Amino acid sequence: AQTVTQSQPEMSVQEAETVTLSCTYDTSESDYYLFWYKQPPSRQMILVIRQEAYKQQNATENRFSVNFQKAAKSFSLKISDSQLGDAAMYFCAYRSGSGGSNYKLTFGKGTLLTVNP
Amino acid sequence: NAGVMQNPRHLVRRRGQEARLRCSPMKGHSHVYWYRQLPEEGLKFMVYLQKENIIDESGMPKERFSAEFPKEGPSILRIQQVVRGDSAAYFCASSSSSGLNTGELFFGEGSRLTVL
Image (tube, rainbow over all chains, first blue to last red; front, side, top):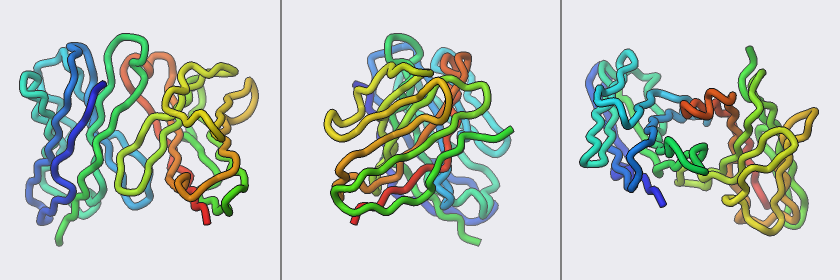
């Protein structure tokens, strides 16, 4: 079974600075997707960024980018120019790309990000 | 274009009562997923449904929990004879068929169940 590990329960960053959230995963599959979700105090799960494992290029969405290291099974999220609205719980998630249960997301336990003004 | 709608947002039940949580998927989505989030934990998969069919309920407890997605109306997650350990946030997500392949799930705001 796949597992997702977020080793940082909490992180903090100064407004306008850059922060990196770590995520590692364990899988024997070669075809899969990785995601970062944001959960603000409203508790809604918001997709931040997605990476297909077959793509070598790291995904980027505005101030959010990932460092995807397939061999190391690492998938970190970098937030540049941090804003107060980035404060939230961030979850890393894995999904198989093929096979019978390729609809299930496996989540890590989350990293609580605080942004200091 | 309304997103995934869940209700109620908050539900309080006493031990032994029943809880019913509803989820209306995004317009045009026929795939519904339920996840549970315990305190200090990530979301855990419970069940995957398509219209009138349960595709995978491997993450759902065998006792007291059931789910349905009828031809008309919202998906329902039903918990009978609730216990304190059922207290959690229950999230519904939906996808279109193409979204299923790309992993694009859209989540609702969750229903928070508190069992007294």
